[in-house]
Image 1: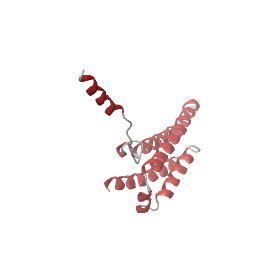
Image 2 (image 1 turned 135 degrees about the vertical axis):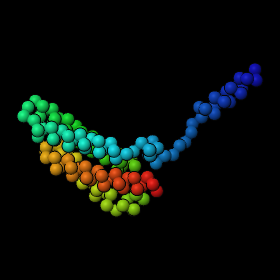
Image 3 (image 1 turned 90 degrees about the vertical axis):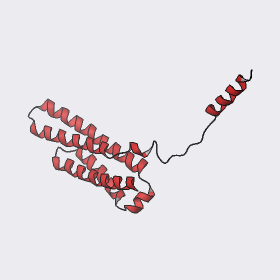
Image 4 (image 1 turned 45 degrees about the horizontal axis):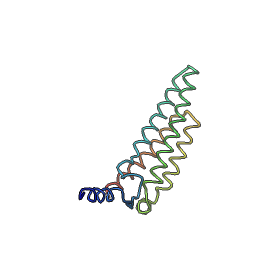
Length: 139
């Protein structure tokens, strides 16, 4: 009968509420601007394919996919901005807010055009965010 109290004590330790604290949803290793970049590359690719095609059905599909991917770019950028970057990052990189604002605006603009230059601008903005992101990961 001594086993039962020991077993119950062990179960209590496993089932007891535990308070945990984290500064993000999961460890920071899950965040990466590469997700936004990959979707932005897809936006650019859809634009290029749209511009190279004479097939109206194909062009319609390219626009639909491009708009979906542009929305995903915005999503991945906002996750980085709202979940990863913190006030100390903004102090070290005061242009960060404007950079995210411009990048998400560029993603929105990509939904409204098939001008590859818009996608290239978006990729450039993401590259700047990427550079800052990796600088913060080193710190």
